[in-house]
Image (cartoon, rainbow, N blue to C red; front, side, top):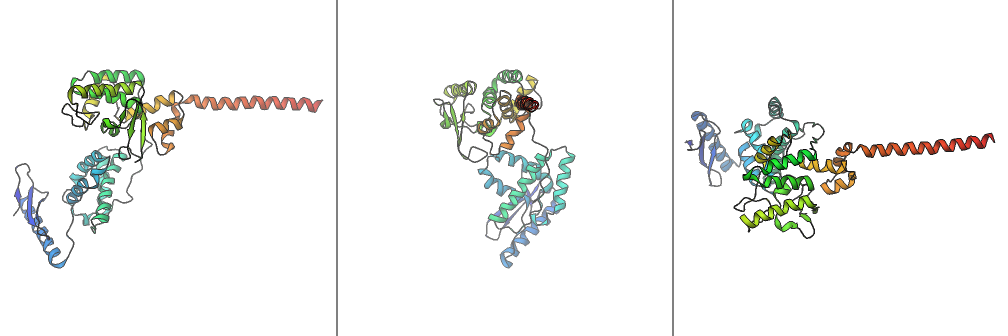
Length: 359
């Protein structure tokens, strides 16, 4: 019979599967009669699987737990997957995968849009479900449909938010005023002066920092493009690293992480402290990834070529970097000036030709 756990109002079922293993699964309901019916259906499925070799019905919860515990653990976007799963859970909790249709996908998208969620975020959420289903079909040989295929929404042009150097100085100063999160100031400085991604910085190990060469090395598992690479450190980025080194020496000398807590464990998130610093500094609508945008904007405005910026930011497609080209109007002015100079030379040649003809 269904039972309740102390930490949940939901009824749980306990039964033995076709392989003889004890299964404890949430029925997803607080209604006891409904829970009894669900448990009975699951036991019937086990009977059919055991005696008739039928495949058991698979549920959303079973799929997501298996995916997060499997391939998602190897992804750099693991945190993003967990967030997406939490958003999917309210609508798909307890749903059998075999019953999913395109109408369910449309209903989910409509619901998230009513909540004011951006298309890019919705795409990440339905993308997780799509990837999990494809994985289950391919690796676990589950015979389940995938109505999420081909449902990607059109997204607006990528968001580019950058701040001025004066705003950056205020932001760093605001971050330094938080004694319990002094690492955020170093995180901001390193991001502004290297263009590294949030995950690359928070996952940075001391073994990949070369202060002699002023380089940070990134392995294939550390980068979004899955390639080997390195990032140069200027004086500001170097000082941010040295600040972390001083913290390590005094608080957690054995920690392998550049951004570590006092006990040496890795800092997994800076969202709360970062948002607090932005609020105190009066810097609005600014996220950790925007440090990377700011780095690119400053470089382009200083006259660095788009190709060099692409190499520093490790963009696999230069079209991504071209989004910053409009921040360097001087390049366009130079191009127009070339046309003007060519026109002058052309006009001079025409005048000489006219003189020769009249002569």
